[in-house]
Each structure stands twice: as structure tokens, then as C-alpha cells.
Length: 266
Image (cartoon, rainbow, N blue to C red; front, side, top):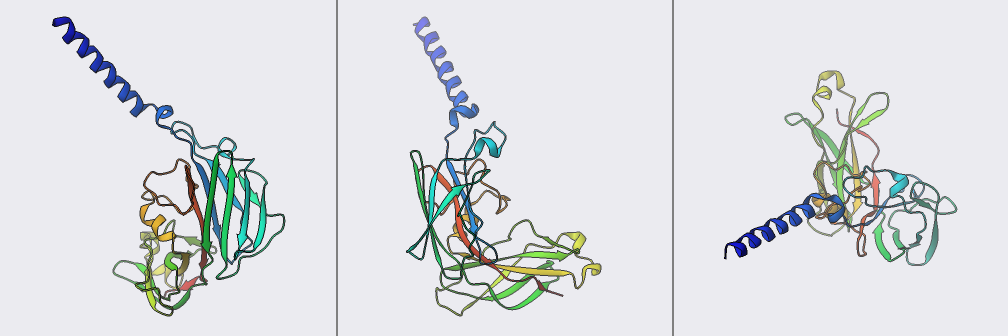
């Protein structure tokens, strides 16, 4: 009986060690995912699609390691216009010619890399129609009233004129219209201006910029890793984030967006 107890204790410790190894060894918990990144706006030429793979947690991100060079991808615009995408460098896939997106166009992305296939669709929002702006001096943040359009959500960044604009690193929240009807309004706000920009020396130099997004951006923003900036290329991925890419073991955002001009708030 004594030996049986000793064997049982030994096996228990062995199993416990295995479990801990799974928890602590990045190689054992790592699962490769394909990462898609593209933001489409009317303000510039189509930017291309960045395609990478996640890396083990103990590997520093290096685009030369993470990039995917041999995928097949193409766009379909408004259901009929097909545009192939070709690898250029650093995971970027671009069309053979430059073109600009147009408000209310639908962009679809089709892709295949080995066993990974993926699909996404997004709509290009209307440039935000801003009805009024102001600054809340108690919290030192800017606000704006925006006309809403079906399928769109809205947010805003503060900015300060320093010769060139210094922008907030991320949005404070995303405002979702209460109904899908056209011509309602919604209020958006920025994060608070940093303390150094709250003095009277910056009066007349504080601005707000309003953004409109395809509606799927709200799910991403509400579930993304806290403090992860919008332009983070999803280096390691996040288990709870809601992406708008469809495909097994494929994550990322293929999102339509638009933005207002810089609007002075005082």
C-alpha cells in the first residue's frame, strides 16, 4: 500500500508538471493565425492589405518573419468589379493601379493562403456631417453632434495644432445610433486633453476630428485589448476580440472609414 501511495504521488506530481509546462511554455500554447489588416477611406488611394501571421509569445515581432508572401487575394467592389491584389513587400498586397474608394461602396475581400481561406465585407461610410462642436471644460474633452446614417458608427479624436497636428493615440468610445434611420444625430466625445494642453496657451489651438466607421467597428472596439491602439497590427492576436474577418484561424479588420476635417473647438 505504501508503494502504491508513493507511485500515486509521483504520477500526480508528474501530471502537475506537465500541466504547468503547457501553461508556461509559449511553444505549447501557440496556435498560428493569419492576420488581415486594411482600413479603407475616401481620403486617399486604396492602401492595400497587410497579411501576416501571429508569432509565438516569446518571439519579438519582425515583419520579415511574420509576413506572408504567397497568398492569393482579390477585391470585389459593389458585387461586380474585381481587382486582383499582388504582393509587394512587408506583407503588403496592392492592386496594379491606384484608385480611390467612393462613399457607400461595398468592398469584399477574398483570400487564400495554403489551408487558410478568408472573406470580409465592409461599406465605405459617408464623410461625417458635423452639426456642432464644443469643449467640456470640466473634463477637458471635446464633443460633437453628428448626423447619422444607416450602418455607421462614430467616434472622435482630440488634436492640437503644434505647427503640425498632434493627435490623440486612440478613441475614447464609439457612439452607436439608437435607430438605423437616416438623419438622426448622435453625440461623440474625445478622451481628455493631456494636462499640458489644457492651459490657456492652447486656446484656439485645440481641435476635434470626427470619424465614421462601418458598423462592425463597434464590436472590435468594445472587445479589443485595453489600450491597444487602432493601428496595432494585431501582432499576437487576442482571444476575446471580435474581428470582421471570416475564416478559421484568421483574425483582423477589413474596415471602411471616413473622417471630417480638423474642427476648432475654442
